[in-house]
Image (cartoon, rainbow, N blue to C red):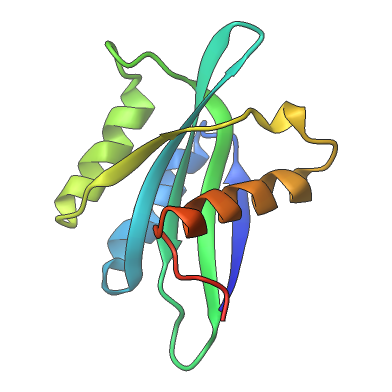
Amino acid sequence: MIQQFIELGQGYGDIYELCELVKTNEHRFHNAFIFTATHDGNSVASLAVAFKPSGESKFMPIYICREGIPYNEEKLSKRIEIFKQTIQDVKQQENILEIKHSSVFSEKNQYYQYLIGILRLNRYIPPMQ
């Protein structure tokens, strides 16, 4: 199975697009994630949703809004609250994972391979077949 991240943006207005994808593809929903990272002393979050392949396809898309949302565990931002509510509306629960910031990697592709490795290792997405 091929898993690939599709970046929607950094979580400003595109968070609404991510939530709409969840609502309209509820039947394909696989898992939701809040990735937290620290950069220059600030905590930021990335929001992501993995969908099951459509039809006979072997392609699993993982849509992500990357590192544009400030993260404070005690007082969540409105965007994170909207995301969490959308996931609850489809009777699912998000997974919160602390990861390395993308700036640690020399290329964005390396960062996404790192995330796929973490998700496979923790069985949040299926292994490579």
